[in-house]
Structure formats: C-alpha cells, structure tokens
Length: 118
Image 1 (cartoon, rainbow, N blue to C red):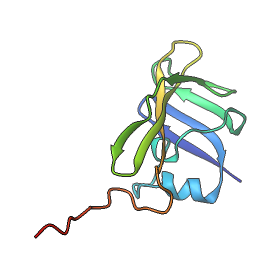
Image 2 (cartoon, rainbow, N blue to C red):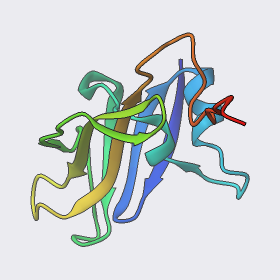
Image 3 (cartoon, rainbow, N blue to C red):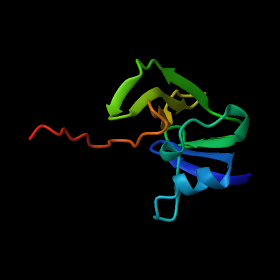
Image 4 (cartoon, one colour):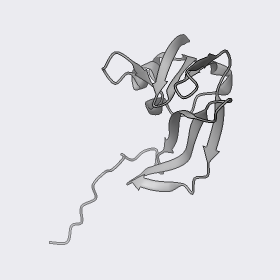
C-alpha cells in the first residue's frame, strides 16, 4: 500500500491506496485525483484538508451516499453507487466518487451492436 494525497474539488484526502488505484488516480498533471479511483474505504483514509474551512483534520472525512437506481450510463456500464466525501465540520464537499460495474463481465463497455439487415 502507498500513502498518497488525492485531490478533489474541495480539498484533498491522504489515504493508503494500492498501485492500481494510484495509476487510475494519475491523470498526468502531477497530482493524483479522488474521482477516478471510486470509493475509498474509511479505514484507508488517514487525514484530509477542507478548502472551505481552510483546515486539516487527522481522521477520515464523512462519506455521504446518494441513492442510485443502477443507472445504465453506456452499453454494458452501470452506475451502482454515487457519493461524496464531506467535511465533518462544515459539511463542505472534499470530493466525489462513483462506483460502476459491467452488466456482462465478458462484454465490452459501449460496444457497438450491428444488425445484419441489408
């Protein structure tokens, strides 16, 4: 596990992540970002900084889960969960996450389907 600083729109979270998560979080601009990782486990989040409070905290932020109705966002790609990491003091949003899954694990996401009607 690697301890890394992961940036969101309202601050950052320092968390232990694996190498695969670090690759997802790296968008090639010299910072790692929360959103591409998906949901972090509360026990892996060590500290966070809230831009709204302009203050750091030595624990994990709150996790606010929004209800999801398993929305299909592309062919074979389902939004399962949507949530936010929020500040315990001001309820400001530190960052957001989304959890997706494939309907059919053997299929491709967004795969075009052609008919043979000529």
